[in-house]
View 1 (spheres, helix red, strand yellow):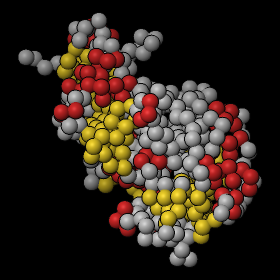
View 2 (tube, helix red, strand yellow; view 1 turned 180 degrees about the horizontal axis):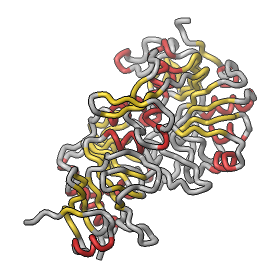
View 3 (cartoon, chains in turn purple, green; view 1 turned 135 degrees about the horizontal axis):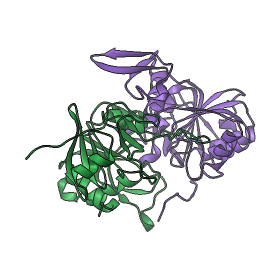
View 4 (cartoon, chains in turn orange, cyan; view 1 turned 60 degrees about the vertical axis):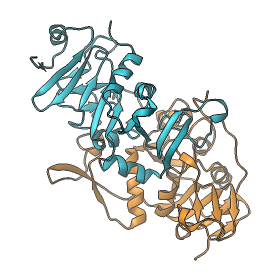
Length: 231
Length: 212
């Protein structure tokens, strides 16, 4: 389908998620977190999910709320442990959730590979560390590399700033983070935005995610949340 | 007196060339930014997708969509650029950053770095971007106290904590001395309150000292 579908509610937009899906969830901490899509996914109720995201939830909102709802079997992330990751910490310590820790750049590059049709890639990150144990290694031009495989999602849930009616996206500041790469790496990409404009209203030179990667768009109200460490 | 964290940050900053692209790790390394005057044109990278990061955001400047890798609100400087995570880490892994400054639990005599997991029972491992930074920047500077709270040295013959990177550290800036990791051994390039003899007595790592 050449044009993204625009939905009236986050609930309709996330209806594509099925039990057992691998769901890529954008955001770095709370910046770029698709809060409304996650809340809709909680109402939707799909379970046994594998979540791929940088963190494993902050406070009681967003991803943390999804974990608390018991819908997640496994988390792939780079940095679960934070001052306010108590929901994840508790589930992990009780053995109720699986964790795969992935170096942050590998997390991004493995999704990039999935979206770009790369079968696997040799990466210098993690060589000689516990996170490379059991993985194939190879020396190329005198440097050691670890073989890393793509991470492909069934669905990506991301947040962007503005979409046009084609599905082209622009982001805002560091809320961009994993959005563009996750959009490429999932079978179905669902995006929440703060506004939708007519095709042609976004300068083609500044489009960050071209519409080919975007399937479903929903406009949501901007959410105000406090930032840890704000002074 | 050993250097306090601010003095140590200032000492690290002295060794950063004007015009460098620099990533400062979470925690103490962040303080290095306070000692980089604008006129030397150092550009700060934050791995969550920005070059040209400015100081922490205060009051009205706080924007939840503009944070650093520690998820603390920051500001943007003129000439800043935003990019996504895969680009940000390609920048790091591809050797485009001149310097990164990281904290550490331990550094070995051959420049192995341990800074992500103590392996303690019940600890939840979290690596973030540490492994990518450790192998990516042209120069990896570690900033740490030379001794742990129990008095044990953190510059060691071999790391006992799980590694972040192998042979990746260039320099170790500590409250007592600065060490350069070289193929010939660990070279003392500056010391503050402690003689080389005292350092030799307290460290199990052989030290090389230039004769001037």
